[in-house]
Amino acid sequence: MSQIALDEFHWILDVLQSIDVGLVVVDRQFNIQLWNGFMENHSGIGFSKLQGQGLFHRFPALPESWLRRKVETVLALNSPTFTSWEQRPRLFNFISSKPFTGRSELMYQNITILPLTSRNGTTDHACIILYDVTDAAMGKLGLQEANQQLKVLSVTDRLTGLFNRGHWEECLRQEFNRCQRHAHSSTLMMFDIDFFKKINDGYGHLAGDAVLRRVSKTLMQVLRSTDVAGRYGGEEFGILLLDVDEPGAMYVAERLRIAMAEQIVEFDQHHICFSISVGIARLEPQHATASDWIAAADAALYHAKRNGRNCCVLASRLPGLLSEAKPLPAQVDHA
Ligand SMILES: Nc1nc2c(ncn2[C@@H]2O[C@H](COP(=O)(O)OP(=O)(O)OP(=O)(O)O)[C@@H](O)[C@H]2O)c(=O)[nH]1
Image 1 (cartoon, protein in one colour):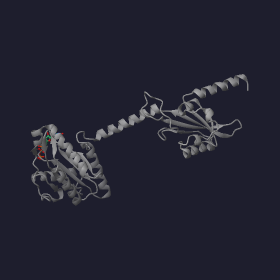
Image 2 (image 1 turned 90 degrees about the vertical axis):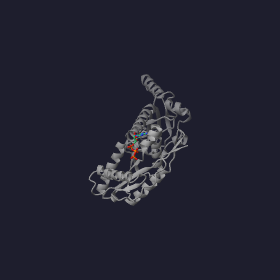
Image 3 (image 1 turned 90 degrees about the horizontal axis):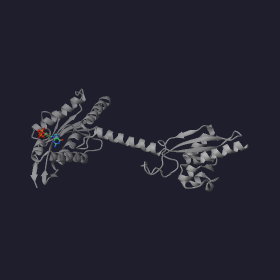
Image 4 (image 1 turned 30 degrees about the vertical axis):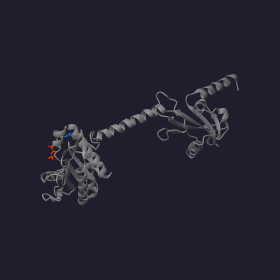
């Protein structure tokens, strides 16, 4: 080798040694043939201690079967492969070295695996290249998290944590369409807190808000995870009971009504009781739109109010009433 060629070789080795990218060369038996400065710094093990040793023997936490498969494919096809951190967050469990910007304890890595062809034309070595992409990954994950939070906020009612009206109505429309396509039926419940204005007028808006939050908490305790509950208006709520018939819905509505009437909201040294009135409507063939379905449940709710409140009414039984009005709980009970 000429002096110039030797110098160039030396420079290349210097560059490989100090480049801010991890380089590992292995042979077909996965014995380590090259381990650059980046790998030394992040693993804390110098090349002299690893040279010729089995990669999986020295690094048992590596995903052995995955890496074997990748390297063997690269060598067989004589073609490189790339794996992003989104497919596999990291190959080596290196600690992230970005103490100020980094929010992740471990480094995120992109990985390229290259086939290395010798001068005699055989491809018996592979070069694993590791890029530290922790900053980019954290940026993207942060953005995804923020988007996810925005998505949740955009469908949630701030006060109660239930679905807001817009999203709940969208769920209702989807269920309406699903029932039309598959010729089966679900049931809708609309309920409203009785004499809610009196609570606001008597104890202030914040007391009213506390009652609305208690309604939502009670709903979450009584309903199943498949039920879709939303805040429809100020003190009116809608619940979609999927694949539930009228008797089933009446059973749920009564449970809900009783659970609400048993609540005592403590606010500013007052004990506040309340009740709800419920209208129930199964999706019927005569409901041409989702709005017709809501109107049917609303009509039943209106009758529940007219019937004395604290009761449940089925739209299919209008104007007759299925459940008798119960005595209202004393609405405001001084401590
Ligand atoms: N605290 C509070 N009150 C609200 C909110 N949204 C609506 N309201 C109040 O809810 C009350 C609804 O009163 P009405 O529609 O007269 O109904 P009601 O007093 O419950 O009487 P019935 O429904 O006939 O039993 C009004 O006083 C509204 O100001 C809210 O977010 N917080």
